[in-house]
Image 1 (cartoon, rainbow, N blue to C red):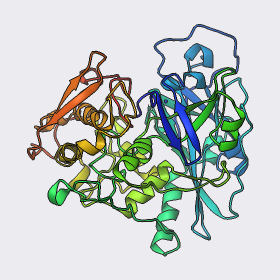
Image 2: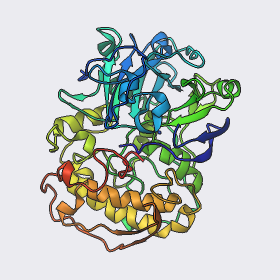
Image 3: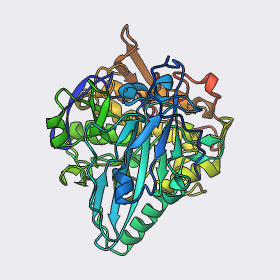
Image 4: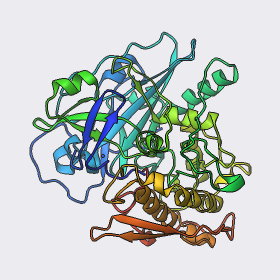
Length: 474
């Protein structure tokens, strides 16, 4: 899942303004919601989980414009738990809606605002003007370990068809509302010729690799083994503005940026952010964008748009969410087909089957990641090294970041259990960031297509379930 936050960079966001993303600025099973008290208290340093309070009727225009509230789990306040948007790098939550007009086939994006419980927005959210006939999906991203959906009213989660995982075993950082219905409608309209999803595009900058397994000079999509990590298709591209003087947040719009002097941009580390804001510009590609209903219809991307683009432009060997993804393991850290299928359904992906296992069973996912991504990074390292690192504590440029991410993903997926060898050798500086990498590009064969279960969390290299050493999500 997602790494803490995009660190210390300047990027152009949505074609509207430069944003300084600071390191200090990245049926549901709900835990009890905390009190709205904002009385100062000692933060629980070890806390990695938060509640997000979902408003009533979350799929309606009013519900989308009602701020979601971030707070502690188990009765802890926001201050006690550290679940505040001023602490977004460690425990920030982000929400994103993608809306489909079921009459015209037009798509829109709207990013509902998340505020710290007990605060008010820096600027009241824009109320979106929705089509008369529409279906929406809401995606949640989190920079901590586990984000628990809690309804603001008794029926809020049911009204939104919200899904947090299985009972007693949430996904973790990612959750959804109404994804299955959205993608069912989108796929039906595509088949009928009423929804157009563009080509992924091609770039002459890309050096083709991987032979018959590779994608040539086609731009990468989220189902592409050239760019996946241990938990593909996770987290959102939502950005918020933080007023550091007051701790209040606002939607990331041109007007709000101009009216909140000194604002900091908060981000959710995600595969989609990595692809849309870092890999695509470096490789000479363009993400799939539609009108942002909160920002005067400026073009923007979303997690759901990236999934639609990937489904329309499936590579020869597609990377689907595997059973050894940490977010789809059961409460004991074992493979869970039902939980994997639930996650896939919310993204419109096909269910686990003999056919999908040909590319994305635990062993084959590892094998494809090694055999496809390794030569891609090796051949394109000069170009990728010109790109900005999303997280400078992991790699000093885009190339070293991706190389270190691949090595970490290999271990955290338990790929060594399938007779595979980590193809990456990373050189680290004194702070533990990758500054160089070399590869072994020999094609490898997994020893088993079923294999043992992934290692327990205690055996995993790096951070405990999406903590700092593990750049999952990015």
